[in-house]
Length: 203
Image (tube, rainbow, N blue to C red):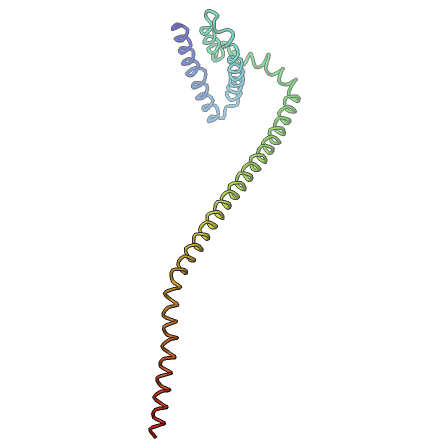
C-alpha cells in the first residue's frame, strides 16, 4: 500500500512539473515570440493533455491495480513532450483532428443546446428562488404584524384598565371639594342677605 502511494505521489509530481509547468512556460514563450509554429505545437499538446486527463479519471479507477501503471503514465507524459518523438503532434494529426473534424457540427449543435438548456434551467430556478424568497418575506411580515397588533391590543387594554382604576380612585376626592364649594356659596349668600335686611330695618 505504501508503495502504491509513493508511486502515485511520484507520478503527480512528474505530471505537475513536466506535464503542466514546463508546457505552460513554453506556451508563454511561444505567445511572446509570436512564433506560429511553436504556438501550434503547444496548442496540440494542450488538447492531447486535456484528453489524457479526462481518460485518466476512469483508468485510475479500473486500472490502478496493474503493475507499472504509474510508470507507464509517466513515460506517456514524457513521450508527449519529447521533441524527438513528438507524441502530442502525432496523436493530434492522426486521431484527434480527423475525429473532431467529422463530428464538429454535431458537437457545436450539442454545445448550443446545452447552453440554451442551462440558461432556461437557470432562469427557472431563479424564478423559483425569487418566489420562495417573496413568500417567506410576506409570511414574516404577516407574522410580525400579527404579533405587533396583539401587543398593541394588550397595551391598550392595560392602559384602559389603569385609567379606569385611576379615575375611580380620583372621583371621591374630586367631588368632595366641589360639594364643599357648593355648600359655602349658599352660606355666604345667606349671610350677605341677612346683613342687608338688618341694615334695612335699622334705617
